[in-house]
Length: 227
Length: 307
Image (cartoon, rainbow over all chains, first blue to last red; front, side, top):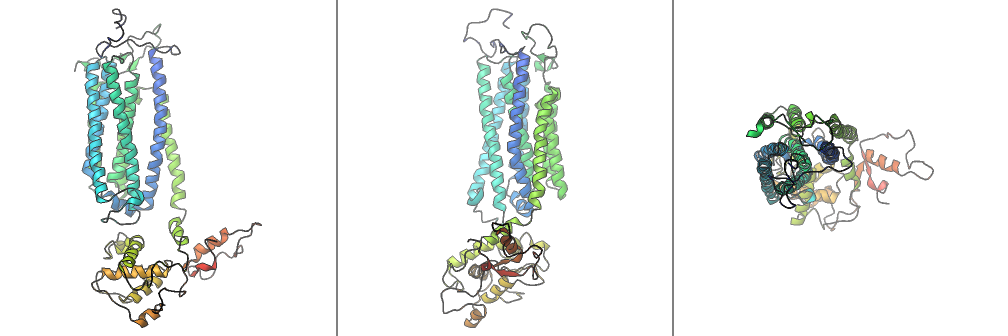
């Protein structure tokens, strides 16, 4: 790297020739800097757990309160599409972590391919979700007071769909944010701003992406399977 | 896949730090571990989906949550690398779930065992007596039937079903079964509007059919109109039938034949909330909360929910 030959002029860095990283002066080393950033990311994910957790608690309580309505309502969801999205997200988590490992070994080209695969998985997830939502809207299944599906009029059924749209909506928003962040990573790698000495953004965005997967791991059985 | 070789190496190899006091570096997850984890996650997903087709009652829920948690632990410990990370990060992440558990365990008993807050709310929101929406509500119009259907879909559908066939979700638990409105057979009080009205007002003792006298009389007539449309034929009342049901057919409204009523238990709670400045409670003296005739109904105008 920088100690092997003279640093190239600014602007000539790329994924095969990343720029050297100099850690902040208040850190002892690159590793020290990375650990601090990582702990911050874990703290942020705690706040995410508590936010989504409030929705889970609300959902569980109303499910216990109105078991028949929630049982009837969950049958309207398409288990096959839900399972497909689960598989897609799990695969995307694997490509993400493979990408992180590739960066850490200095193989930026491989990392870029894996990150593109991850974004594509996210796009497949969103497309499937789009078809699920539009099918529901077409039937007249809207959240809250706008519910007007004639085929299922058990009391409190609209409550289930309010939770369904809110929880999957918040989750889908996270997927879109994650896809944007990974796209940003790809650009950074291409510009040579990521190396095996500095991969903090890659690993932290990876955590975020795995967290999104983790939320779906619970959403899928709770909403689609265990009515 | 030359990456796979030496996958137990560490990043930060070229760290410019002075001295080697950070010798452990950063653990790089071997690709083989990632592939094995991926397979495990997919197998666990298959198990969850497969089990959803086997009906095990509560066990479906328990197994579903256990499998999801196993998957979550795999993702957190391997993909998010908590197994090789500083322990403090595991503690931080686990703390979120501990607080979530406290949140759920304190909220659940309060929410689930507080009593029937939902029905009580409905009863207090009775329409103010004397305001009628329909002229001659005992004579069905499309508007009256639509109004009755709306109430039916809230109040009746759980037992009688969306199509009135007596096959609602709660019907299985009831013996005798709820009335099938699409058949003319077996009607205890008869199928005339005044007779259905009587059933709605008084209920059917010995069956699951409760009194719906809490619903104002005008709204009850609209339900009757809707129930008539479900049957094989639409019955008519004679003038005498209507008079017996408390309707004066020469007038346009129901008049003052019947006050809307609410259960005494609800009334007691409402009275006890009317506490005066000295801290004395309305009409109820301490120790007399359990009145004789508990379960009967009192007239709603005895106290005014909207003073």
